[in-house]
Image (cartoon, rainbow, N blue to C red; front, side, top):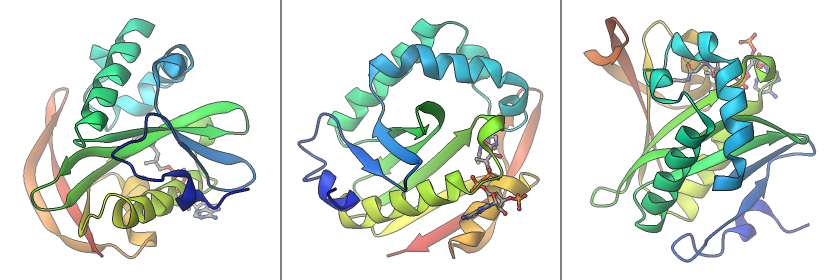
Length: 190
Ligand SMILES: CC(C)(COP(=O)(O)OP(=O)(O)OC[C@H]1O[C@@H](n2cnc3c(N)ncnc32)[C@H](O)[C@@H]1OP(=O)(O)O)[C@@H](O)C(=O)NCCC(=O)NCCS
């Protein structure tokens, strides 16, 4: 079995990759063939995800997930973003990636979500740890940025477990349906 880092030879040339996280968890660059299963997971978890994520009303059909993945692949080819799907055993469990790569300043903005049934087992912490390695080693970032709503303690626990620094709060950073959330900024420097 190749080491995970060896699977991404050069992220600028790659069209598909996967990384082995452990015996049960694998992450793959998101491709359109994942659309139906990823949409199903999203659809089953609307209530869980709507608490903190603002985009649920834009994903109403499998075609919406497919269009989103296609857009992310275009952005990947321009080195603007990386969107990965998480597999737990044979099932799609969630996603994570760099929502935005700032190539001028070598900063990756990292985001994630899991279906509720897959939470509580350390899956996301392990996947974020791997994405940090990919970001610093393959994408050559010098900083990784995670922003969490102040009240989203499950999300905040991930950068805190992985030794990110809490750099402070920005107020009214994001509209989530009918209210604006303040964000905590977490930073990790290479
Ligand atoms: C944010 C989110 C991904 C966190 O999920 P999570 O399951 O708590 O995170 P992890 O997969 O890293 O699991 C951590 C949990 O597993 C436990 N765990 C078990 N084994 C572990 C291991 N080897 N390593 C780390 N944690 C482990 C931890 O104790 C923790 O449980 P606890 O919260 O009861 O203490 C999830 O709550 C979610 O998708 N929320 C909705 C969307 C969202 O908020 N996205 C983020 C926006 S900023």
